[in-house]
Image (cartoon, rainbow, N blue to C red):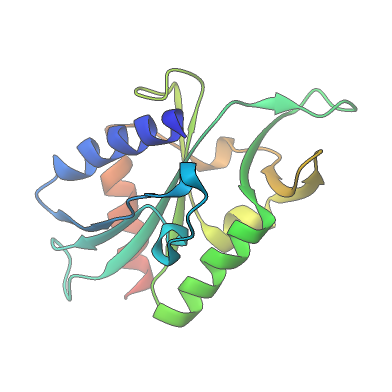
Length: 168
Protein backbone atom coordinates (compact mmCIF):
# COMPACT_ATOMS: atom_id res chain seq x y z
CA UNK A 1 0.00 0.00 0.00
CA UNK A 2 2.86 2.40 0.80
CA UNK A 3 4.58 1.99 -2.57
CA UNK A 4 1.24 2.36 -4.33
CA UNK A 5 0.54 5.62 -2.47
CA UNK A 6 4.04 6.91 -3.25
CA UNK A 7 3.44 6.22 -6.95
CA UNK A 8 0.04 7.98 -6.81
CA UNK A 9 1.69 11.06 -5.29
CA UNK A 10 4.33 10.98 -8.04
CA UNK A 11 1.54 10.89 -10.66
CA UNK A 12 -0.54 13.57 -8.92
CA UNK A 13 2.41 15.96 -9.04
CA UNK A 14 2.76 15.40 -12.79
CA UNK A 15 -0.97 15.95 -13.37
CA UNK A 16 -1.09 19.00 -11.10
CA UNK A 17 1.84 20.66 -12.88
CA UNK A 18 -0.08 20.77 -16.17
CA UNK A 19 -2.50 23.72 -16.47
CA UNK A 20 -4.57 21.77 -19.02
CA UNK A 21 -5.47 19.05 -16.52
CA UNK A 22 -7.67 19.28 -13.46
CA UNK A 23 -7.71 16.55 -10.82
CA UNK A 24 -11.45 16.17 -10.17
CA UNK A 25 -11.16 13.27 -7.74
CA UNK A 26 -8.44 11.27 -6.03
CA UNK A 27 -9.74 8.05 -4.48
CA UNK A 28 -8.71 8.16 -0.81
CA UNK A 29 -8.31 4.41 -0.10
CA UNK A 30 -9.26 5.05 3.51
CA UNK A 31 -10.19 2.05 5.63
CA UNK A 32 -8.36 -0.53 3.52
CA UNK A 33 -5.75 -1.34 6.16
CA UNK A 34 -8.57 -1.95 8.65
CA UNK A 35 -10.64 -4.06 6.21
CA UNK A 36 -13.42 -1.46 6.21
CA UNK A 37 -15.41 -1.63 2.97
CA UNK A 38 -15.77 1.86 1.47
CA UNK A 39 -17.52 1.69 -1.90
CA UNK A 40 -15.58 4.38 -3.75
CA UNK A 41 -12.24 2.86 -2.70
CA UNK A 42 -12.79 0.56 -5.68
CA UNK A 43 -12.84 3.46 -8.14
CA UNK A 44 -9.76 4.18 -10.24
CA UNK A 45 -7.24 6.40 -8.45
CA UNK A 46 -7.82 9.63 -10.38
CA UNK A 47 -10.64 11.25 -12.28
CA UNK A 48 -9.04 13.86 -14.51
CA UNK A 49 -10.72 16.58 -16.53
CA UNK A 50 -8.79 17.64 -19.61
CA UNK A 51 -9.69 21.35 -19.58
CA UNK A 52 -7.36 22.16 -22.47
CA UNK A 53 -9.55 20.12 -24.86
CA UNK A 54 -12.92 21.09 -26.29
CA UNK A 55 -15.82 19.92 -24.09
CA UNK A 56 -13.34 19.29 -21.22
CA UNK A 57 -13.65 15.47 -21.30
CA UNK A 58 -13.13 13.26 -18.27
CA UNK A 59 -10.84 10.24 -18.00
CA UNK A 60 -10.06 7.84 -15.17
CA UNK A 61 -6.46 6.91 -14.49
CA UNK A 62 -5.65 3.89 -12.32
CA UNK A 63 -2.04 3.93 -11.09
CA UNK A 64 -0.27 0.65 -10.35
CA UNK A 65 3.29 0.31 -9.15
CA UNK A 66 4.88 -3.04 -9.98
CA UNK A 67 8.13 -4.91 -10.26
CA UNK A 68 8.66 -6.86 -13.49
CA UNK A 69 9.15 -10.58 -13.02
CA UNK A 70 9.39 -13.72 -15.12
CA UNK A 71 7.23 -16.80 -15.20
CA UNK A 72 9.13 -20.01 -14.52
CA UNK A 73 8.95 -21.16 -18.15
CA UNK A 74 9.93 -17.88 -19.78
CA UNK A 75 12.62 -15.24 -19.80
CA UNK A 76 10.15 -12.53 -20.85
CA UNK A 77 9.51 -9.87 -18.21
CA UNK A 78 5.86 -9.57 -17.23
CA UNK A 79 4.10 -6.86 -15.26
CA UNK A 80 1.31 -7.89 -12.91
CA UNK A 81 -1.12 -5.00 -13.26
CA UNK A 82 -4.44 -6.09 -11.79
CA UNK A 83 -6.29 -8.72 -9.91
CA UNK A 84 -9.05 -10.08 -12.11
CA UNK A 85 -11.81 -8.75 -9.81
CA UNK A 86 -10.27 -5.25 -10.04
CA UNK A 87 -10.24 -5.39 -13.83
CA UNK A 88 -13.95 -6.35 -13.83
CA UNK A 89 -14.71 -3.46 -11.47
CA UNK A 90 -12.91 -0.95 -13.73
CA UNK A 91 -14.78 -2.36 -16.71
CA UNK A 92 -18.11 -1.83 -14.90
CA UNK A 93 -17.20 1.75 -13.96
CA UNK A 94 -16.32 2.46 -17.60
CA UNK A 95 -19.64 1.02 -18.77
CA UNK A 96 -21.76 2.69 -16.06
CA UNK A 97 -20.21 6.17 -16.28
CA UNK A 98 -19.16 6.24 -19.92
CA UNK A 99 -15.69 7.44 -18.90
CA UNK A 100 -12.60 5.74 -20.30
CA UNK A 101 -10.21 4.05 -17.86
CA UNK A 102 -6.48 4.30 -18.50
CA UNK A 103 -3.96 2.16 -16.66
CA UNK A 104 -0.71 3.87 -15.69
CA UNK A 105 1.95 1.39 -14.62
CA UNK A 106 5.07 2.45 -12.76
CA UNK A 107 7.86 -0.10 -12.91
CA UNK A 108 11.14 -0.53 -11.02
CA UNK A 109 11.97 1.21 -7.77
CA UNK A 110 11.66 3.68 -6.32
CA UNK A 111 7.89 4.13 -6.41
CA UNK A 112 8.36 7.87 -5.90
CA UNK A 113 10.31 8.05 -9.19
CA UNK A 114 9.90 4.84 -11.20
CA UNK A 115 12.32 3.85 -13.93
CA UNK A 116 9.55 2.96 -16.39
CA UNK A 117 6.08 4.32 -17.10
CA UNK A 118 3.50 2.51 -19.20
CA UNK A 119 0.12 3.94 -20.22
CA UNK A 120 -2.67 1.97 -21.88
CA UNK A 121 -6.42 1.92 -22.24
CA UNK A 122 -7.96 -0.80 -20.09
CA UNK A 123 -9.25 -3.08 -22.89
CA UNK A 124 -6.10 -2.70 -24.98
CA UNK A 125 -3.88 -3.62 -22.03
CA UNK A 126 -6.06 -6.63 -21.22
CA UNK A 127 -5.89 -7.85 -24.83
CA UNK A 128 -2.08 -7.93 -24.51
CA UNK A 129 -2.13 -9.76 -21.17
CA UNK A 130 -2.33 -13.27 -19.75
CA UNK A 131 -4.39 -14.56 -16.85
CA UNK A 132 -2.36 -16.16 -14.09
CA UNK A 133 -3.00 -17.47 -10.62
CA UNK A 134 -0.78 -17.23 -7.59
CA UNK A 135 -1.40 -18.56 -4.10
CA UNK A 136 -3.96 -15.83 -3.36
CA UNK A 137 -5.76 -14.59 -6.43
CA UNK A 138 -6.34 -14.64 -10.15
CA UNK A 139 -4.47 -11.79 -11.76
CA UNK A 140 -3.61 -10.29 -15.13
CA UNK A 141 -0.04 -9.70 -16.32
CA UNK A 142 1.03 -7.94 -19.50
CA UNK A 143 3.50 -9.99 -21.57
CA UNK A 144 5.31 -7.17 -23.33
CA UNK A 145 4.69 -3.65 -22.10
CA UNK A 146 7.20 -1.86 -24.33
CA UNK A 147 4.48 -0.78 -26.77
CA UNK A 148 2.87 1.16 -23.90
CA UNK A 149 6.04 2.90 -22.63
CA UNK A 150 5.80 6.67 -22.10
CA UNK A 151 8.12 9.20 -20.53
CA UNK A 152 7.43 11.38 -17.52
CA UNK A 153 7.73 14.44 -19.77
CA UNK A 154 5.21 13.16 -22.31
CA UNK A 155 2.76 11.50 -19.89
CA UNK A 156 0.13 14.24 -19.72
CA UNK A 157 0.33 14.87 -23.48
CA UNK A 158 -0.12 11.14 -24.10
CA UNK A 159 -3.26 11.17 -21.91
CA UNK A 160 -4.57 14.24 -23.73
CA UNK A 161 -3.88 12.62 -27.11
CA UNK A 162 -5.75 9.48 -26.11
CA UNK A 163 -8.72 11.45 -24.80
CA UNK A 164 -8.86 13.69 -27.88
CA UNK A 165 -8.97 10.62 -30.13
CA UNK A 166 -11.82 9.18 -28.08
CA UNK A 167 -13.92 12.35 -28.39
CA UNK A 168 -13.36 13.27 -32.05
